[in-house]
Image 1: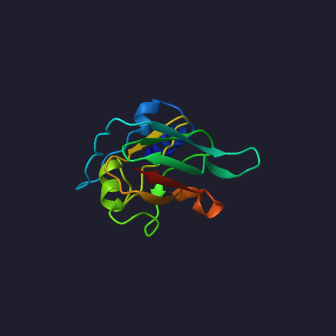
Image 2: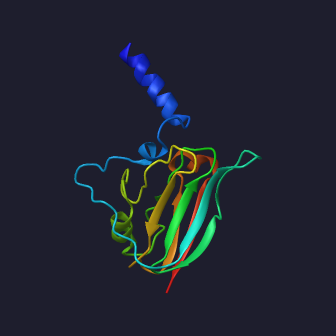
Image 3: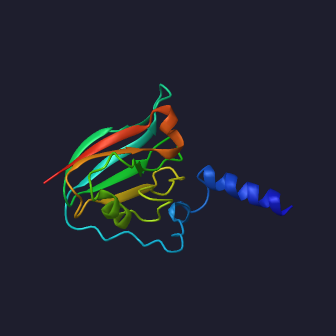
Length: 153
């Protein structure tokens, strides 16, 4: 009986039932630190979608920002989605900055899964090294959900 109740609760959460804010919150793993506070800068929007053609995409999939800006990813459709920066595809020194700026990480440079429609995930690039940053959606990387951003001075 407990398994049935747990399965129903998970199904309701995955389908968008219940409190959206509670669904978007994740517990920070032991030893993990909360994200660093964002500084003043522009906020850039990126949508995470499943298109009508059946493609999983970040829109836009290429973005140029300035050091100090924030990127806000929104789960529009086809979730769950997340943002995982790819080791070897970020500038030297970026991993430490990203890990400090990413709340509720699932692992190094790996943001939480966004389960609820319209859930958002933000990362501040305050103090980030300039250069190219490659990232993927962990659940949909094999389906081509990849993107990059360029950080400039």
